[in-house]
Length: 324
Ligand code: DP6
Image (tube, rainbow, N blue to C red; front, top):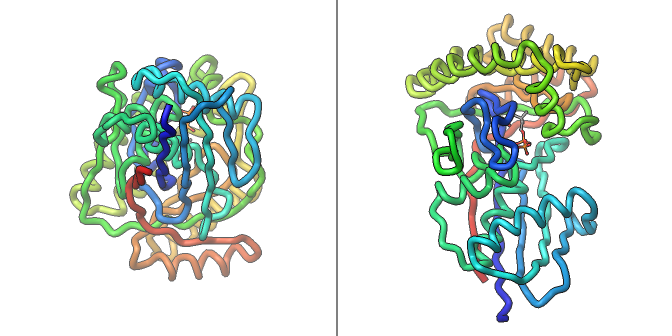
């Protein structure tokens, strides 16, 4: 077979209204719709080359992947092979580029880039929505990294109806990352969300709250109302973490550094700065603000949280695919 190769670049995204919990694990159908901002800072560049090979291989930043990390990539490639009627294995070469926000390693940029490169290398001609649905199968949050700026992932009810799309807004946003801890997380989001759905008495209450949060957030985005967007995003994230704390056994990604950063964000707000926190499956705190206030807020927080690295990030572009 002739060798087929493509490279894709995708950026990480931070959810303002979160995805937490799957109603269908195989299809990666979530309980809730989610809203995110794709960032310029962290990107993944992935090349996929199908060829006459004995097995799939993958490297990340030059290191060969084994075990579950490789299996997850191979299983994803199976989806692409099945659709393209392809039987050959692939070499996957992936690089995470982190010019600003260290500690933000992301399965979203990773699986979005893999989806784009693998589909193109296999000769599949997918539009953005089809690519978003494909990326979703690798990692839910990857469905949103197909687009630049704000993206809304519709939970949907089947493979066809669960996809992300871009959302336009007059807001000029920025995200600060307060680096509390750059070590790998103790429990993967995949495992933590499974346990939360299965055991937390608070989970379905959060699912209900999240639908209302999303409505409020989308209206705020359309109207350019940063304060309402920020308040809603912070409440949604803290609610998500509360569901985990009520799981059996309890899960908490917060450290004392997380609590300190959260307190600093509240103080910044009390001092009149636009600042609202959000936290994912890790200890780091991300702060939503306006592009105009981002540098000033970063200075304020650096003074308050001496010793912690704080980076400023702005909205980034959607996926770029280079065939050949
Ligand atoms: C807390 O997309 O990493 O970042 O679908 O199992 O791969 P899988 O999960 P993943 O979960 C992201 C969870 C989150 C919130 C969010 O990004 O919406």
